[in-house]
Image 1 (cartoon, rainbow, N blue to C red):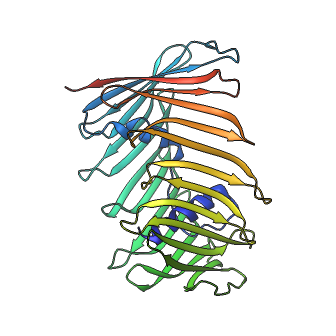
Image 2: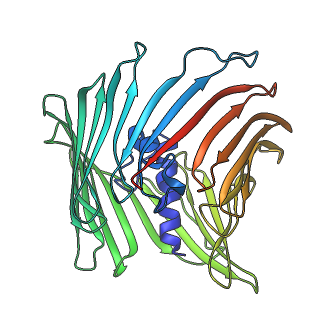
Image 3: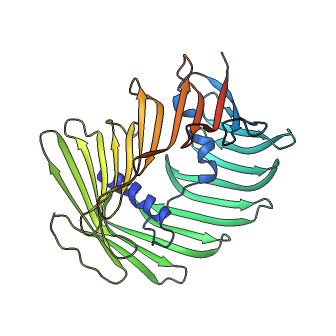
Amino acid sequence: MNLKITLWAVFAFNSFTNLNAQEQFNDFWDWSTYYFIVYPTKNMGNKDVSEVKMIHQGYKRSGKPSKKPGISFKKFDENGRPVEMLYTDKKGILRKGITMVYDQNGQKTHIELYRKSVLRHKTSFTYASKGKYSEIINTNKDGEINWKSTWTYNADGCVTESAKFKKGTKLKRRWTYEYYDKCKLARSFLYNGRGKLKNTWSYDCKEEGQKLEKKKNEIQVCYWEQSSIDYITKVAQTFDEKGKLVKYVSKFTAKDTLPVEHTTYDEKDRLVTRYTYNKSWDLQTSRSRYKKNGKQLWEVTYEYMNDSLLVREISTRKGKIDERTEYAYNSESLLTQKKVFGTNGKPRFAINMEYVTRK
């Protein structure tokens, strides 16, 4: 497991949960299409599904259905990639919601979002190489640019510069990166639209116990690794957006470097969050958050069938069940129902899925 990849995900997550934080990377996350892309595609595999009908049912507090269910449709191409989502409005009229287009390498080139079948905005993607963006442009319904991001790379395929623009031409932010060797990051820099340096991240610290120093507009990041017979523990220590020390600890199996646990600690080495895994990022077994006094604030646990299919997740707060979600599958391991129950044990909402295959 690559520590840099793990930390990249951690820092990206932090930048999205702390909107005032200075983001280190010009990452692209399209939350408006996330649900469309990943759900319920996880277990579809090579089952040649062409369409999924999703029936959305809400419930009253008494547990009785609240209203007429909503219906949406997701369509997939021969490679199992989502290409279109349709939905029925309040009058029962079928409307276009999202469309996606791919190139010959299976990379998305366009995402179009609609409201009542009218185009709202379009995101276009171009690539420097497989899996690496060179440009992303978002336009409104009239084709005018809302925003644009660009990336450039060196001969080793490492990003050397990235920029984000408003309205297509007005520079908002620019990032540059320096490396020790190949893609081993040494320092990264963030500039505002006027070219003023706003922040620097340095990676000179590589030993446990090395003191991190607060510097104006500079964040030091320290890595180290510990090994035992059973586990490899990788640690990153830096400052958060408030200037307080924070530590990220990832534990992997020693034999095959599979994920077991990821935790974060505050400046006083108090546990803040804990995530556990059954030797796969796709098999998360729990996630929890803790108060400064060490008591657990909340926890979500996950149960699987045959170590592959998620069948139940239970959310607890202060030791009491806050929410329970049940998942059901057909004989082909395709998800057929997701049903959420509240604190009173009665259903809140459910999604039932019906599949159409090409066979």
